[in-house]
Image 1 (spheres, rainbow, N blue to C red):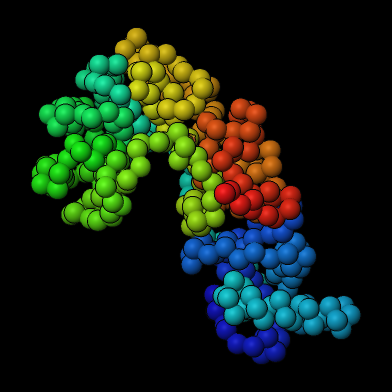
Image 2 (tube, rainbow, N blue to C red):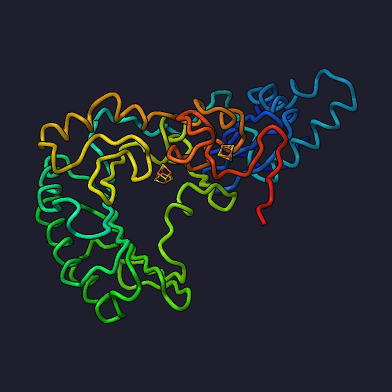
Length: 349
Ligand code: SF4
Ligand code: SF4
């Protein structure tokens, strides 16, 4: 395909196309163009979105051959702006060439596991991880809500390595547990620790040691207030996220959690529990994880959710199903302050 970037008048018989990495997402009050390669979202009016649907695939001559002169002027201005932003282009070929969608794999195994701890004795960590061994998640997050001892942390890490084949480990724990030397030792010994979050520090710090990002927060661990928060700054505009959001839940798909009391859930804050992990055999655990009820939550996508389904940000927005308006599985996330019917963010003071 020939990509040409010149002024509109040069194009004559060439065909107007959207770049394959760009997607128009129509909303109730306005629309957005997601550029999944440049990671940018451009807001446009619904009229411009409709015009784009109508003119993409037409030649320059066809676009401007009919219509009133003021309409032609408006179209000319829209096309010039979008050409400049490299959202559309004129091509010698008429066929559209879309980027391939990421394939939906039929494998039902989970990909990420969250383990919460308020003490080491609420559930049997050795037995729990053994039960996941035939269905090993590739990402694991371990969160400590109490001052865990260093030997206990090492024990959990060893147990993870003994039973699971994990590519990335994220650890959240009190700042006082690890000084810089102890932290470096742990990262040296565990090459798959990719992120450590230390809460309750004296200043905010963000650093990196080898493969690991280290963040120190002054706040106490208040996951309940921070998890599920929706903000413009948190939107993700890339090829994978866009296609994932079209097909499944961007938080809960293939996710599993053991809450601090040892109960199995889709995430630690989802109201429904599938039982205490110590009371489930490996087979029962696998059956639950593969059940329609468990997996179904991972398939609640933005298009199924009231209000989100008409929002122009729906395929860039991380979706929380634990904290929703009316506590309904199909309601808008509770911690979203955007009104897609008016296009206005409500400021929180
Ligand atoms: S569903 Fe909500 S609370 Fe649960 S992990 Fe996702 S964002 Fe956090
Ligand atoms: S309305 Fe829904 S899709 Fe839109 S920003 Fe809020 S949570 Fe995200």
